[in-house]
Length: 300
Image (cartoon, rainbow, N blue to C red; front, side, top):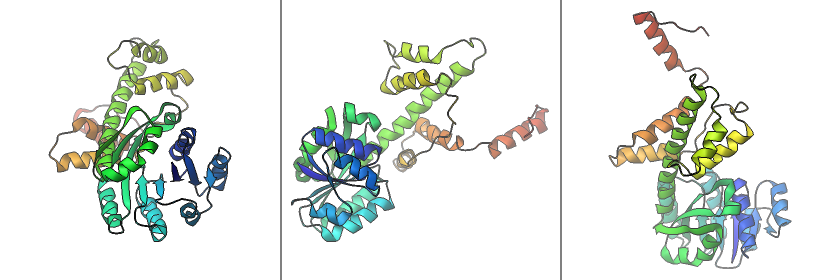
């Protein structure tokens, strides 16, 4: 099939390459001209702007948007919309808020343009291993794009999970779970690495050990094996952990639905804590402990 990919970052670029390997024809656009040239060299049709993207596609057009969530998605849609025709399909493969996706879908439906949300997981490994695609949208439009989804996904790694917004909703909760799993591994390895009883513990050895028969064996722990293999104590890294929004949205949704989600909530709060070099809250606790109990404090 023919489609366009807007946004050739770590995800969009690898997806473009995987699609071309699967026999699809891809019109490629990114604000970075050098990146466009890279994928043109692999066989993609280059486009220098969004007008050219649309002009190089046959009808009905299929355009995959792989840009950061929020305003960049709306700006891209706004620029594309005057050039689109009834029956064209836009796919948002980024981590958009599901409520935004529903609103965009309703807006585009008035123009008879289909909007599909494809929650995409797999990271930089998706090129080689295939992606997991959680797809929402009109059934007919999704079926029309199914050859694209099947080429991107690994075996059994694609499903149409519901109407517009459902794909991003499932991906949001997926990422909330990911927050909690990452925090669990982080705390466990920190305990192992900080203990004074067995200071000779080899975290790389233990991570590799856990990949064989252990109930915590997983792809995330496999990545821990890789990380500890490169840097046994992660001494080259700073413990700053960003978030792209999905954890916050999952916690907000849990509250809205009256669902207790303490582990996901605390894992999100720990990410916020990681961004403070010296927590004022920690200073307050230290000061109060010193005031009521004479507990020792450390100067700055």
